[in-house]
Amino acid sequence: MFTLIFLIFLLSDLCIRFWLAKRQVRHVLKHRDAVPLEFAERIGLSSHQRAADYTVARVQLSSFERIFDSVVLISLTLLGGLQALDLFFARRIDHEILRQLALVLSVFAISGALSLPFSAWRRFKLEAKFGFNRMTPALFIRDTVVSTLVAGIVGAIFIATILSLMSAAPALWPLLAWLFWVGFNLVVLWAYPSLVAPLFNKFTPLDRPSLQTRIHELAKRCGFELKGLFVMDGSKRSAHGNAYFTGLGRNKRIVFFDTLLSRLNDDEIEAVLAHELGHFKHRHILKRMILSFAVALVFSCYLPG
Image (cartoon, rainbow, N blue to C red; front, side, top):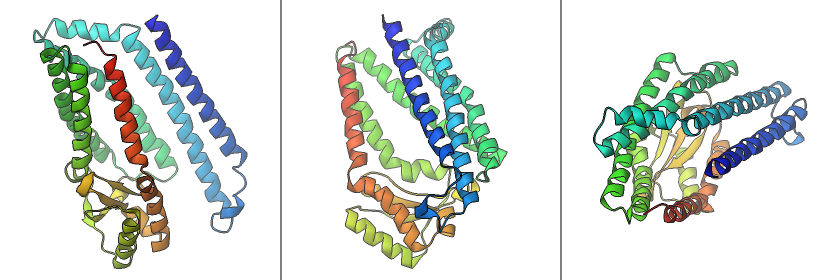
């Protein structure tokens, strides 16, 4: 019965996502040869068509990757992949928690390795085709190694703690695990700007007085307490430009891609950031966190104690 329910949900999710992707592609292609009137004076037809082709290519690659991920998931679950891994580690590791930790980490490692070709294709084929990629193979390898090490260390700590709670408090472990998960997420959100992000990018204080004044005033109107304004060297990886805020509590900061600052004027940059801060002003981030924590709590109540 569980297998049937699992397949129904998996196939339903796959079909709905494909249906939405097909609708998006059809709509983009339908309007590919005409720039919307609102942007006709500022965007040329060739740029509009290039953006449409880029969108279609991204959606198609994501759809193919989703099929592949579903096949991997079915292979690990219904076709015995997890069982084979469990037996492999059971013959070699006697300690129960270490064995389970090895099992979980190996699943993440296998999934990450299988998704690596898609990441490389997206970066060096798709993004390069449309002139967005600036990452070198050496930097791609470095990012992969660093992100794998960080994820492995953090993931091992998290999983080992959960497994220890399951062993030490069989009756209460779902609630204790949920409390730990909530605290873990909050710590990561707080620590990411100053501890994790600098492992991948260089951040320098924004040195543009006119823009600094405007952003501080915008943040004040939104009730956003920020610790600093920074510029990220996004240009060494991509030609895309963006701005975002990150952090938690008093450790919040606003970050601009250097590519964004090089292409837009102060009015345009403020508009981009206003969109991001709109999520904060309307408490979208907080609402999503609360919903996520609540769903996890409900789910934990049905786990065996």
